[in-house]
Amino acid sequence: CGKNSNHVKPRILLMGLRRSGKSSIQKVVFHKMSPNETLFLESTNKICREDVSSSSFVSFQIWDFPGQIDFFDPTFDYEMIFRGTGALIFVIDSQDDYVEALSRLHLTVTRAYKVNPDINFEVFIHKVDGLSDDHKIEKQRDIHKRANDDLADAGLERIHLSFYLTSIYDHSIFEAFSKVVQKLIPQLPTLENLLNIFISNSGIEKAFLFDVVSKIYIATDSSPVDMQTYELCCDMIDVVIDISCIYGEGGLPYDKESMAIIHLNNTTVMYLKEVTKFLAVVCFLRKESFERKGLIDYNFHCFKNAIQEVFDVRVKVQQNRKLLSQR
Ligand code: GDP
Image (cartoon, rainbow, N blue to C red; front, side):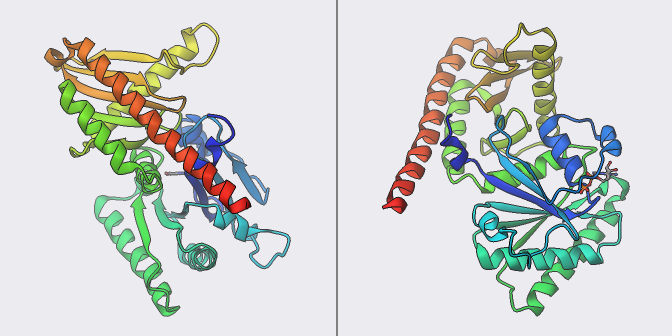
């Protein structure tokens, strides 16, 4: 994955008022910080905090509001940034008054849409850990209504906003990020199809394709996702990476040889294997099925080759487009 892979990474902007939780989200999702530690994060005053992560399948940037981004500042080329963005996540602190946040959301979305109407607009109604279930639904309804009313008033009903209830204190932030990233992967149906073929030929019950660093799942087979299963996968990735970091002999904690098997007491086996530099598959299967590990490994080998082809084709298409546009 040389330089070219940067062109094909889903690119995400994380925006919102100061203290809405952007740095915390970044630290928890991409840097394994524990949620409690975010209490001590210091606010930065830089205009644009950039973190194009070289170790993840996803690349993204953080922008702070208010006062920090002035759309009228001619030296700040927000147009170029919006043009290269796949998804814009706007974080709203649900525990705070959100009038100012909503007006910033409106301004940002309308500006970004003018530059690039293909951006996906994703609103994270964040810090919902402090709210009761009823309260959460109520907040979501209210924010949804106000944001869409503002767009309708401006004659921009065609802009679609998606809403998610998130918190860094549970898996909701990873789940929301997974959905955002999945929308940016044009080959998602192909990946799902490959996972379906892989599991049905191997006696596997459920399989996820994970970005190892962020624990975002970029695809799964078409059976329904159960939150608990997803959480177990996240825990397994943490265990594998932690053990490799602590006891591994030099080198990277995740590489071509990475694999792990965990037998759960309820006769289920979890099986993790490396797919690419960034991705791993985590599978759930019954103990009986795991007895045919040779078959599973053979099918996995075919699956892995197919995945690599899917992403190689994508890089080639991008390169060709670039060459054409340079002519
Ligand atoms: P930023 O200015 O948008 O980058 O905001 P920070 O990431 O610095 O977060 C501001 C405060 O919100 C910190 O004290 C975090 O601990 C807290 N915070 C972030 N996310 C959550 C969350 O999901 N729930 C709760 N209760 N607090 C959060």
